[in-house]
Length: 361
Image (cartoon, rainbow, N blue to C red; front, side):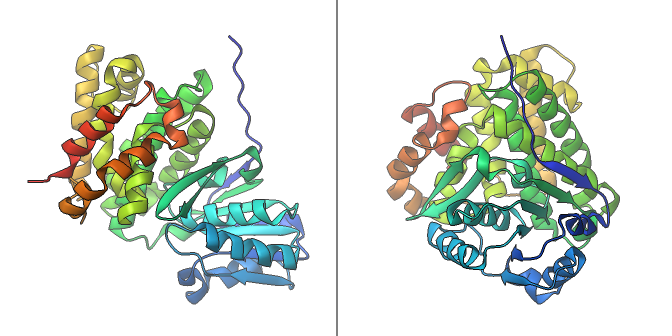
């Protein structure tokens, strides 16, 4: 069976790698970021390192960017007509910037500079936008950036909660990519190594060890390369649906959902999950026991990172969850991520997972 793997994104890593923006010799640079990086001077420092005097900054990115926000930004991109578009920030900033470039119709390279280690958006064909309270994945090869800059100098002051949230997103990406139905030997290898690296580095980074943060950055990009081609699954479909409805951070939702989804898919992806368990050092036993150890290991890591165990602990009102349950189930089942889940999800499966993670009392 023929396998296809492609990666047009050039990846640079290490402290000071932002300086590579100057290699584009940009005459007109458009930077997309959020108010935090504008206020603390990082945005202007990026422009300075690109060595351009003609630039425009869009600093209006908010968490869970909307279609309307991306449309406003796209209009500004079209009007400015840059020859380089730079995304600076976490997944929201990168997704928004990629969508703005896509919808503007302006043909220019996109350079992504992630400031968190989680979404992998710097190397993927995905952009997640919110419309009418529902998160919608936009998927197109044209969304993949030309350059990803993994500069760990930007990771020194990360809050512990952000390290935990985004770190579990990496684990979810790797686990779902490993079982994604469009995967192959290359994506499997990337997913396993990303999962191993993240399991080793994440607790240390959370505890304050800054020396491992570049490893987490690399793990996030490797998981992004894997899932961009292998696909994701029910965990992300449900996280998108719940995130749009209740505005809980995406990685936090993945942390709550992942063990339950793993159990739901286990009989369909037993060997894949067992390989992950062994790669991460959770188990060396038979497949069934290895997958059980993987689930327990994820629950233990979730507790170590001080993440909520249930939706109620994450601030989701059980009453509102009951009221919106059918809409959430429908949104999850209609999410493109379900198309590459190891088994075609059905409503009763989603309802069972929600019941397991809701803590309804």
